[in-house]
Image 1: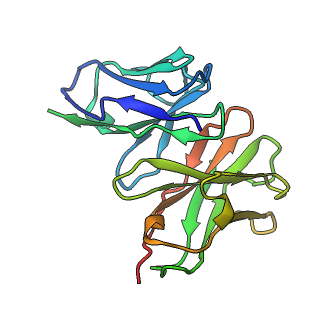
Image 2: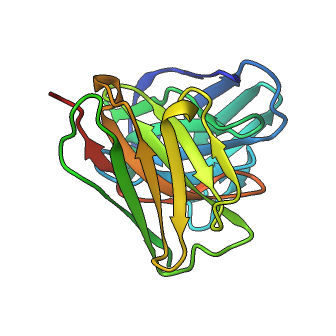
Length: 106
Length: 121
């Protein structure tokens, strides 16, 4: 199975900061990667699909990049409502998620 | 707007079978574009895909680690799909989500709110 890792596992940032979350696949997955935002008690929300495509209605401060084994989710100009856990998910072979990165505020 | 909502029993006991249903509203599960899926999140852990099904039930795609214990089915007359997970252990304690995903691209959207399930004697 393809294993996904994320770093960092958690981070603290301030409003207005630029935040970068990395996701690494154990083998090449081309662009077959999605990103989700998950807030406690709520349904996870799709942010980015196919590594770099912003889902409809998602603020433009979110962006995704990468291909192969290394991917990045960037949140520019961090907002209070962005406090959440972020997951990557590959769909090259079956479907697996990364362990998540929790974003909190300083 | 498509809405998914999980329903199921309260606490369940080890060795029992868990039965969950995902009720879909705002759209039909009959689609040649989408699969219907179950995902779970165990306490303190990340998300785990359980399996997916097409509306006809003719295509089942299961997580190999759970395959021997799961059955996913669809009921187009009720516009819902279901998960059956047998031989429960405490390790199956989790929040269970249902979701839709594209056949081509496998992005989960939307998701249900999630249903906590506790396996305890």
